[in-house]
Structure formats: C-alpha cells, structure tokens
Image 1 (spheres, protein in one colour):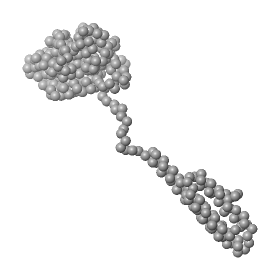
Image 2 (cartoon, rainbow, N blue to C red; image 1 turned 180 degrees about the vertical axis):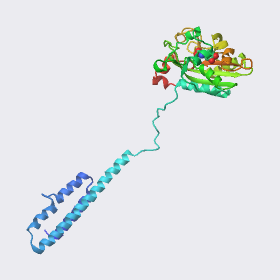
Image 3 (tube, helix red, strand yellow; image 1 turned 90 degrees about the vertical axis):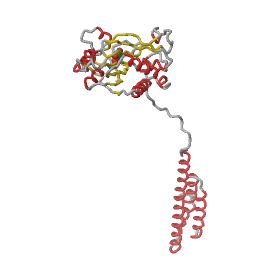
Image 4 (cartoon, helix red, strand yellow; image 1 turned 30 degrees about the vertical axis):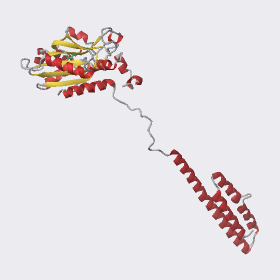
Length: 344
Ligand code: DAH
C-alpha cells in the first residue's frame, strides 16, 4: 500500500459518497471505507503499523489525509441528505392558501336576543330610547308605586321570588314595569323609553311559561297622548314583528297601573287560531299587556296627571320568538339544543 493507493481509495470513496441516495446507503459507504474491521482505508492502518522510518511518516500523512477527506465528505453528504428529507417534509406539509375553506361553524345571536334587537330597532325608529334597569327590585318599585299596595289582589298573579338572608326585603322583579317608575322619578316628561330585560315568576313551566323570561317594557308620556296613540303604536310594532297578515287582536283587560287596560293577542302560528297544544287550545296567544298610565301612578311619581297622559306596555319576547318561528314550546328556547338553535 502506498500513498497513491490511499489517494485512489479516497477518490473512489468520494464518488461513492456522492452517489449515496439516502442515510442507509451512506452508512454502507462509511462502513466499506472506514469500518475498523474490513474498511479499506482502515486496513491501511494495519500496514502503517508495520512500516518504519521515512515510509511510516509518508504513509501516516497519506492515511490521515485520506481519512479526513472521507470523513468530511461523509458529514457533508449526511447534512445534504438530512436537508433534503426536511425539504420534502416541508413540501408535503405546505399550505395551499388558495384552497377553499371547510365551512366554519359560526356562532350567532340567540333567537330571543334577535327578537329583542328587532324590537329595539323598531322603537328606536319611533324615537324611543332603550334603557336598562335592575333585576333585583324592592316592593315599592315593583308593586306599590304601580298601584299595588300590600294586600292588593293583583299581586297574586305575580308569584314572586323573594330574596332571603342578607337580601331579605328584596325580590326578583316580576316584570319590567318598575322601570317606568324609576324613569319617571328620575326625570321630567316627555318620556319615550323601552326597557328590555329579564324577569322571574314562580310559574310552573308549560309550553307558554318559563320561570325566568324576558319582557320589553315601554312608556310614552307627553301632553295629549291618547288611546289612539297606544293602538296605533301597537299595531305598527306588531305589524313589523309578525307581518301585516298575521292576526292580532286587542282585548279589554285590567292592570292596576293602567286605565283603561288592553291586552294584545297574536293568532297561534301553529294552528292559526284553531286551537292546539302549543296555545293550550286557545287559538290566540297573549303577548302583551298595555294601557293608559293610571293618573294615580303619574301623580305618585310627580308627573302632573292634569297636564300629561301616557301609555305603557309590556311585551314578552320569548313568546313572540316562539310565535314567529313556530316553536311549539318556549322551554325549548332555553334547552340550548344546538339542533334547534342552528336552525336560525
Ligand atoms: N307588567 C305586565 C305583566 O308583567 C305587563 C304590562 C301590562 C306592562 C300593562 C305595562 C302595562 O306597562 O301598561 O304582565
């Protein structure tokens, strides 16, 4: 073995290294030339150990040079092959930004929230302001100032949740009407407001009742407001909500805080007036109470009933939603069954 032989071996190794197509083939080349047993360059070391003097020095240098050349070439090739693998992986993972998306599941407003928004929009266009009030109320605002003193029989219709413990004396408002009182106590006429909000009553749940439900209260007080204004406003609003063709009827009614009092019913959307399970066989569903604000109520909050008059109403967006969309049971609106909610 001579220095030239070693150089030739190294050259041949470089050729093989360049030709190795993957990590396994490269390892095979490494073994062929450098393996301690059987590697052709490594074998030279055995001869080297027998050489003497000048020859030993020359052979030693040639051996080291060949081994270094081959080792470095192996490392370079290994790095190249690894880079190629990475490149291929990246390509395989690459994103096609022009690829159409799977349809995304988007959230949306709850149908009741949507009804409330629509009611707000209708009244905003009529010049009303939207205000909010407290859900926890006291007896004075929820009842007394609405002409329902203690022992008043109309209180029986409001199965009230009274708070206990430290909050004793407070109640969960049974309607949004206390905000009429708070609004009038806090300002001067004219008033044109609506009050969307949650209320609660100890009702047994049925297809038209939920213990917690929504109301939108309305109040319009000014000089010269008449029943005709009330009727016109209600007909306009219900026409916007249900379309002009859906049957709406106004009935005389009674509320302690209005005189006269009216209730509005809408024809059941399921049976259109025939009577069915969802309207409890009535054919019509009550969605709103209203009337001319009782002079005593005005007087009690410091509004002069000889100068001002007004109307008020309270409507139920849960029932309105159920009626508009043909939902048979208002309780379904709160079960949060996505199959129902996604239908909107
Ligand atoms: N507060 C009544 C209820 O909860 C609804 C109502 C009736 C509100 C007449 C009013 C009104 O403002 O004038 O059933």
